[in-house]
Amino acid sequence: MVRKSVIAGVIIAVIVIIIAGVASYLYLSHRKTTTTIRKTTRPVTHVTARPPTCKVSWPTVSVEYATLFKIINTGKYYLIVKDAANHTFILVPRGCPAPRNVSGTVVYVPIRRGVYFSTTEVALLYRIAQALHKMSLLRTVVGVTWKGVWWIPYMQELLNNGTTKYIGSSWHPDIEEILALNPDLVIMYTGFSTMVQIMNKLEKAGLKVFVDNEWLEKSYIARFEWIKAIGALYGPQGLRAAEEVFNNAVKTVEEVYDMCKGLQKVRYAWFVMYWGKFYVPGAESYVAKALAKMGGEYLFQSATLRRTGSATVSREYVDAQVAKAQLIVISGFPPYTTSLNPYVKALPDMVKAPALKTFRVFEYHPSYWQLGYAYTGKVILQIASLLHPEKFRGVYRTFFIPLYFTDKTMSIGGVEIIWRGYYEIIRDLYGDKILIIPWGLTRQLKYFNPKVFPALATLEKDLKTVNAIVQTPVHRVVVYYTCTKYVDDLGFSSSIIRVIRGTVNVGEIESLHPDVVILDSSHASKSIVETLLSHKIPVIVLDCSNIKSGFIISLLYNYPDLGYMLFLK
Image (cartoon, rainbow, N blue to C red; front, side, top):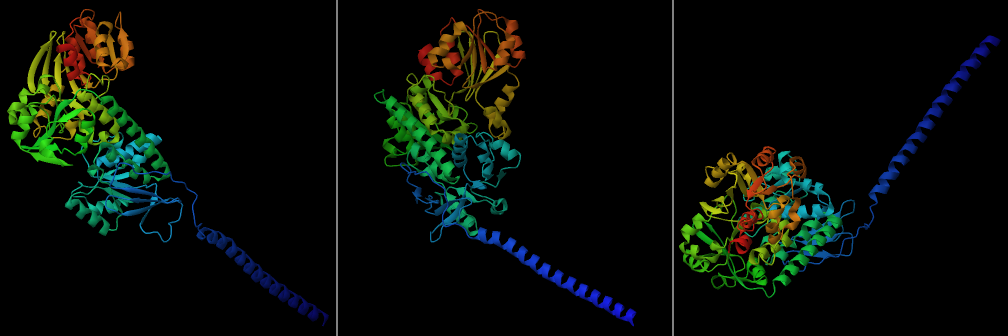
């Protein structure tokens, strides 16, 4: 009986223990679940409670010269920009909330993925990146419509490695390709009905489109002021950098205008010929107005009154006026414009122009529509040097290159010059052939068909037959002391990195990486010249006792006009 009661007690105790264990488990599980819920819900509540404002300060920036865009400083953490199509964009720094009750398209900045329709827009971004010492900004250019030569540093590399994609021409963009790039913004231009239609298609596809029409502004500096609009797309830091770059450009332009006051007027013709038609800037264009401030007397003024853009004029009119020109600027560039020959054939009276006799005919360097937009101050300074070469000695001309006849020869101081239109070959006193060509133009052979552009075929052939190549304008020069006076007269003393007075040390010269070595025939041995050439160092041997040799040196700096005035006149 006792045993049964003990057994019963044990059973009851076990049941009690089991019930207590289950109860404890349920209780602890409930408590743990409740704690977990509290821990996970508190942070979510904190994140969703976004602050009404954001502590970000935009610089106070005004638009002074451009008329086709606006920057509205709200005094708050966001900025409002109106583009050339009067679209309103609310630029909100990343991490900040979009403002309520403000009308416009919200764009979070800095933008990380942009499709750019024009090289000029990328050029403005390049200057901003340069000012910030942050070239990685160019990696935000995920799509472009230009597949030719890129003169903006790094852009060709970005296209080659696939960081930047070609999305078709600006007139026929691949919208599906653009959508696949998932851009924050498409930056494009209008001004043509076709481009307006493309803008509408892009917007219909759900893309945000910012219209940059800097090309329609009425002055060089107004065009460049669009750098502020591009800068704003990269946040407060980008806008500050853009403003600083712009202000420096304005200062340079105003200084150039002041330097030109009171100088003698220069009669100039500025035009280009396409398919037999002649196109010239209007009398009220940004080109004509700028040159007027620098002492230019525009020969096409009367036929283009009140025209702000380009104008088409008759061949007869151009022929009659260009005969008076002291300076001619042909606004084409290689490989499309490669010689004076077709111009003189179309304009017989052009041979009478003083400009042709004094080597004062220039054309654009192909980089003009990229780097020229990035450096407006330099463009104005270089134009001033074309108008007044003696006043602006030592100004490097990188956006304007001399243009000559094709296959004409000239002998100066025993040196033979063979003109090739936009480049020349010099046969120096030791018989070596040196090809003198504006910087970077040999790269164009990769992008243009020599069969279509015969001048490129000639260049391709010449590259294989010369002893050395010199790209102009030269920046690093080693020169024998008897030849330095000519470099000094041209205003480029700062380009001399070594003056040779005794024995030529090949190893030392090679370590300096010169663009060219200029030697006097009275002191240079043939063996030294051959050794330098074998080390891929360009050498020109001249008779520096002959003042005409200074003209050869002027070609190395793209200053044949000043060379004519100083050494040939």
